[in-house]
Image (tube, rainbow, N blue to C red; front, side):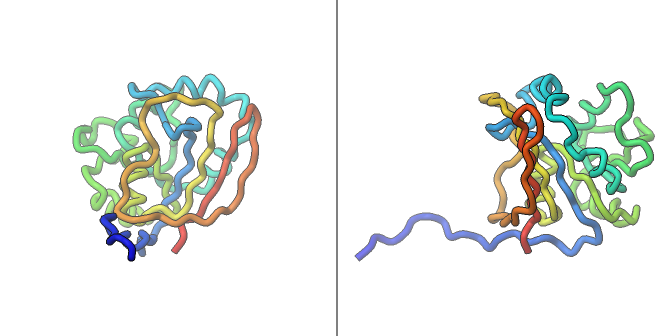
Length: 192
């Protein structure tokens, strides 16, 4: 006789939505799963990034017509020498950003507003960027592909890429390649 289980039942796996766009993630993490230090700094990535060589980012971006990012990712993009997303629809998912303050971005307060704006813009392939935004889109079943580049460094603490989900998100391995300087890039399709 076995004791009854006290573990919560497993919810069914999240499946991709029927959104008219494909949500894709292309992001780097430390080996322990962080996308930035606790203060948002990505020096651990930029200091090592050149050693990776060709990552496929330019090819990836050539197939993107819209982006959704969070405030932290947006603020980091503002520190770059040039705006990295010219000619593309960019949604800033934030309740605190001021709409119209930056003509390069369209501020949306929540996920439903982001989906509606992407549909209205006729977006087909959407780059989902930033830890909380990725988590929200995954939880809603709006991510269809994840390309994760693992940087050979342990940070110990920081901003995580992944967080709690309402259900398992099953992934199908597509490819893995070893880049320079010990970087490893793996692409998964979201099953379903």
